[in-house]
Image 1 (cartoon, helix red, strand yellow):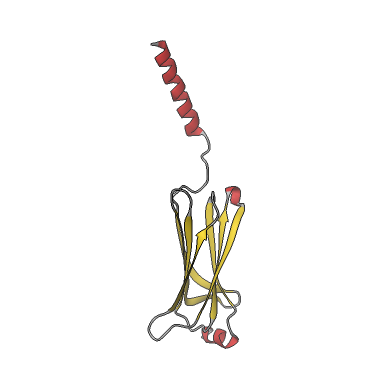
Image 2 (cartoon, rainbow, N blue to C red):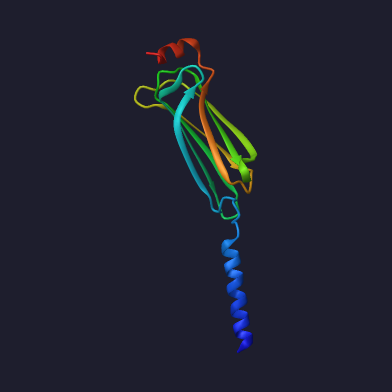
Amino acid sequence: MNSKALIATAALCLLTTLAGAPQAAAASRPFEFHADGTMIHKQLGPVEKAYGYMTVITDGNGAGTINVMFSNGSKLERAQFNARVKFLGAGGKLLQEKHFDCWIDAEGLREPGECKVSQPLTVRNFDKVEVDFYLSDIPEYSAALVTY
């Protein structure tokens, strides 16, 4: 009977110790992350009706896909839509940074111009994902249209 009590006490002490220990901070698997935002240009600021959307989806082993979608419902002609995706480790350490871009004309007759770019996920054991959506390389005449 004493051995059963000793085992139970040891198990209880172990569980109490593990419960109080710091947990691993890596993103659990499977992992799913979504982000969206208005596209921002360095000089023009946020551009109406120009958006970015991104997903990162992994399976139980950490293998996954990064999907970035852009939508241009603005008057910008031939604008380059960009996303900078950062995968961060413990303490905010940058593990990997990926860039996505797509050239999109202004909205069509009825619907916004759209683009989707996908890449396999190559970084493992990240804690956090951050994304910045921004516009670059806008022709001058097109930028003038946006400043209504």
